[in-house]
Image 1 (tube, rainbow, N blue to C red):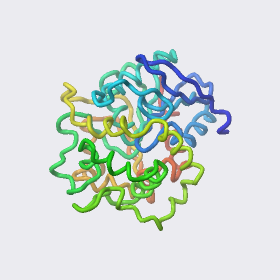
Image 2: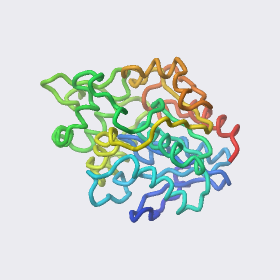
Image 3: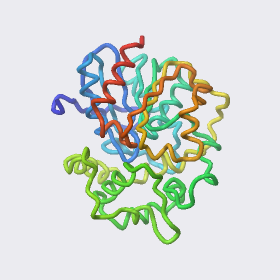
Image 4: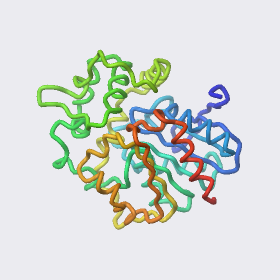
Amino acid sequence: MMEKIQHSHVEVKGLKLHVAEIGSGSKAVLFLHGFPEIWYTWRHQMISVANAGYRAIAFDFRGYGLSEQPEEPEKETMYDLVHEIVGLLDALKIGKAFLVGKDFGAFAEYFAAAVHPERVAAIIALGIPFFLPGPSAVKNHLLPKGCYMTRWQEPGRAEADFGRFPVKSVIRNIYTLFSKSEVPTAPDDKEIMDLFDPSNPLPPWFSEEDLETYTSLYEKSGFRYALQVPYRSLNVETGLSDVKITIPALLIMGEKDYVFKFPGKEDSIRSGAMRNFVPDLEIKYIPEGSHFVHEQFPEKVNQLIIEFLDKQSI
């Protein structure tokens, strides 16, 4: 089925975005990738959703993969991605869509649902509980010292760390490290890439062919934009406060996802506190799932996605 996915470039906000699409249903599902991912991360979900009668669309965010880079990446924020999501829907003549977001793609969909609820029918998030970008989004003082997030927020540090290795090694290292259940954290005398043990194989659900695909896309885009959005722009003021997302939402969490180890996140997810912000929320758990649960257990994730979508109207 991969050969049935059609690829094009669509101009949105002055940049040409790489768009992948399959299915001709009247209801559109727009997939939003995270890091170190790209449109390809949704390959299993796109095919399954299309087979279930939906129009499945995934794209490379600006600055990623085969999409164009903005002129000044260091000035970009998550707000630019919200405008991009709405702009892409406009360009594709889609009035309202379902959004499925993973990792920072979930931040973008929460933000889009808060700012443009008229364009979003329902949201599905993977791996990230609800929170919006803003000054209190990431409380660095609560994170473990040497946490990848604080390291990558520091201008130049990740560039120097990644720059010691070929792009393929960086992607391999991140996929392997971030599929574990502990937050990647480096001691004072090491960098995040130093945590990788070269004797560790790729996760069994991630093939050498998959690695080559990711590598080819990041060799084109590099990591400049990815380090700005999301990492270095998460705490930028958005002007939003007391936000509630009133549309239906589904959160899918792998129980082995390292996100559970961030301060307060497990309690926020398991206690139901998220419903203070997203009242119409379902939460589903996949026992052995990692942060890449949609690639690790695609059939289980696909079933949850389709069951949820089939209950919604648009």
